[in-house]
Amino acid sequence: MSNFLNAVLSNAQYLIAFLIVFSVIVLAHELGHFLAGRLMGIRVEVFSLGFGRRLFGFKRGHTDYRVSLLLMGGYVKFLGEGLTDPGRPLEPDDFMAKKRWQRFVVIAAGAMMNIILAVVFLAGINMSGVRVPLYQEQKPVIGWVEPGSPAEKSGLQPEDALLRINGRRVADWSDVELAVGTQPEKEISIDILRDGREMPVKLTTEKRTRFEMGYAGFYGKILTQIQAVLPGSPAEKGGLRPRDIVLSIDGTGVFFYSFIETVEASPEKTLVFEVARDGRTVLLSVTPRKEGQVGKIGVLQAAESVEKKYAFFPAVVQSVRDNLRLTTLVVRFLVGLFKGEVSTDQLGGPIAIARISRETLRMGLGALIGWIAFFSLQLGIINLIPIPVLDGGQLFVLTLEGIFRRDFSPRLRKIWLQVGFFIFVFIIGFVILNDIVKFLPRGWSSLWPF
Image (tube, rainbow, N blue to C red; front, side, top):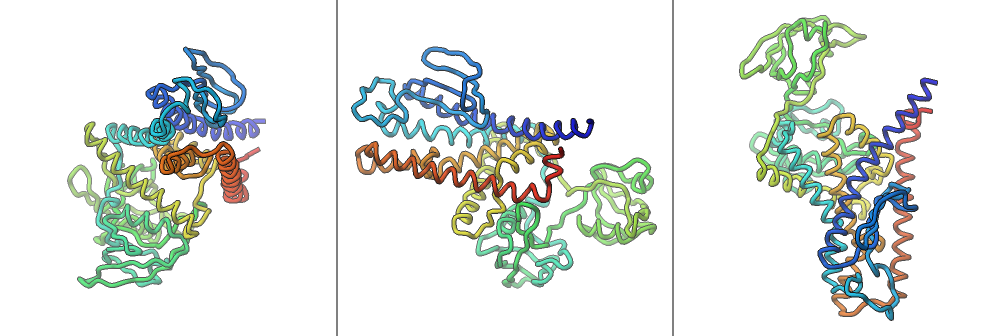
């Protein structure tokens, strides 16, 4: 019985986390339409969180504010919106009585509100303080190459400086991670600087994780920072403390991955750790205990990071920069998907969203807000794609009508919406099936424990 209850609670966490994330994003989107409509003098008949039968709410003026049965979205209904009868009398606050540019603003406001939400949330995180791995902002110079990896096979070496990937300049490791991560099982060209000489390298990536992310096997000069020390462990006995930064072991400089290798290769052998602590250097003797065939010291390690806290205006500026970079990533991904250059396994549907939402909820409020911001930005961009049932499809029609200076016939609008509906249903069905194939066969017990 207890196992059954644990299973129910585990699955409930997925649903609760998903509803929290999705409700915030949908509410922001519909609020964008609502505020823009009111600004343009359009009557709002319904503002609903969810679809289907009305559960509860209240009416103020002409507007019914409601919560509906299916909490998987929401909508705003304007007076006259969607009606195609050309002989219908128009009231001054009717949606179709407004000029095209006014209707364009109202329709675009939903996606724009999602983008604004992403900027505001990331700015809030920047103001409250965010830990940033130092290596991500460093120049992309290789510090470690994993044995047997595509990078080793292609001849890449430590100290190689990465200049360009597929012809695009990479300024830091964030650029490198985006360039490689979006190219699984693809041959990529890398221009490197070695011993003062520029040279090209060809590399065929592999794919890792359920999202089929591209993997090359080279890493930056990532120093190891101790996050936690287990009580009674060799690390504690040797004097290691949380936030210590490991500089070298036995006099040899070590980066994140070689740190793990060195410790595991030295069971029951005393190692001299040189660590940075509170602005000074400390030498410590640590003897890894033998577990199986490898050495362990009992620490949780992470990449060296620093906490950054911004004032209001710098926080907003940094948020805009981060969102512009993420927008570029999303657009490149969508273009690559359309061209067949990106694997559909990198798509995430409701199951993936629920899993990520639950994990970020467990990590804390900051992580959850960051995920909502990223998800909101994605939905804002995707909503502008000219698929008929999306906002982008309506904007596309309004743009064409503006160019031709006349409204399309009701019959043409109906055909456009029907085609769009079938495209939309196909996309949704494909994404859900893709999620099922990706997650359930290998993780059925973790997702559906009972």
